[in-house]
Length: 524
Image (cartoon, rainbow, N blue to C red; front, side, top):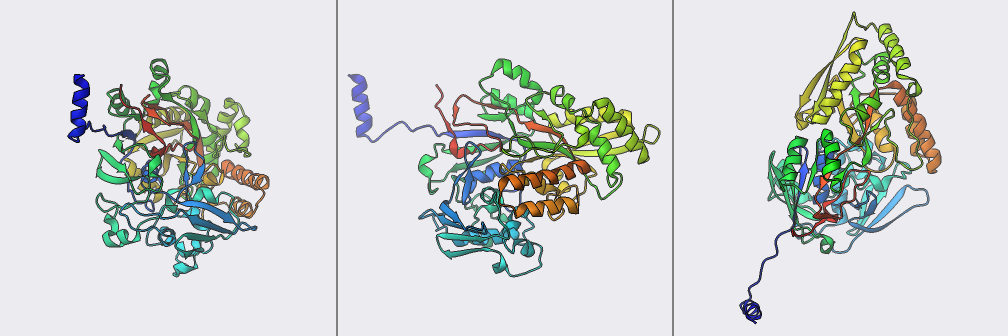
């Protein structure tokens, strides 16, 4: 009776027990370079930007595509015209109306040479986009995107593009708030300035500490977002990430690859080691010695024992990679070079012959410096690679760099050799092969150029039949892998631990589990 009386008194006084906020703490491997979707191309930035912004379509929890800001769309019979219809009554996080013209502005900004977007190349499938991006035309209205009315976005493509929906889900296709950008310039992404249209808004950003997001009540599907906020915690070292997870500071965290066997024993239900559509590779600057000599590149590529790198150096679910495009794309067969089927003794013997013909060997050693971003797993792997190359007369020096410095140097082609990776933006081989296209210098870090390779890419771009298109792309990949401008190393698995409190977590091949699809169970 006493408990009932107290409850009634609380109700009469209008009092209540406040619900604890549901804040998801996600480990973030690197300090973001920026939160401007037109200024970034790294996986870590994309994950935060995808919480803040939403394009016409979005990546769903399974790694597939779902409607985003668009309710539906249709294409013309020839595949050249796409018409998207926006959801009704869309607004920005500040309450202002979001219209089709916001998309037109954002695509033009991404393509504007003054923006210098590192990932504008996927938009070149839009008619007039490449000419505008390269400064060959100054008139943005020549780009094939328009807004017939406030609720309709119309695209005209230069060729049929079966994977166009995938392009529209990446960060360079997000709508951006023109008035905010024009008012604040480069400071528009700072807390208090940033206006977004996604499931969350920016609350704070403390460099090298965290990026804190809060639920956006004006998001068109806010009712389905169960989190009150997301805290992206910057933790560059995986061992620190695991300690903070064990201490309850993180709900989702990367873990050191070398700890995977132990974690399989201690917390198998919390460990995820799924292989994703990601290839780790060494990129070589082919415009300068010694990598302007294809014999040197081929020798280095064929002399690596990838089974050791996958199975002995911090094994955590990764697979040996002989081809740039990873397995797992339905209907596509990766194309490793012919030497991939040789025994390691045959490969090493051939590598010695190629290096000798190029003027290198134990008596005339080749010195190489390889840059790599912070990460213990990478350092161990490069150490093993150095040991494999040493008997051939190749000395490898490791150069660890902070993430932002590394990315900038890679885009500016300043590195002799670099250890990097590519994660699929969508499940199509084009997203990998495009980084070997000389017409895409921002992503073609090797500065590789092959007319035969690019002719096949162009032919595939105009082929509507998917089987025939993939056959052409397989021919193109075979050329690039033979030329060894990049040296595939591993099809990567990013070992993660996820708290039992986190619900809705479904590992997907794109390594992007949206926060909007997750929720937390209360602590017991």
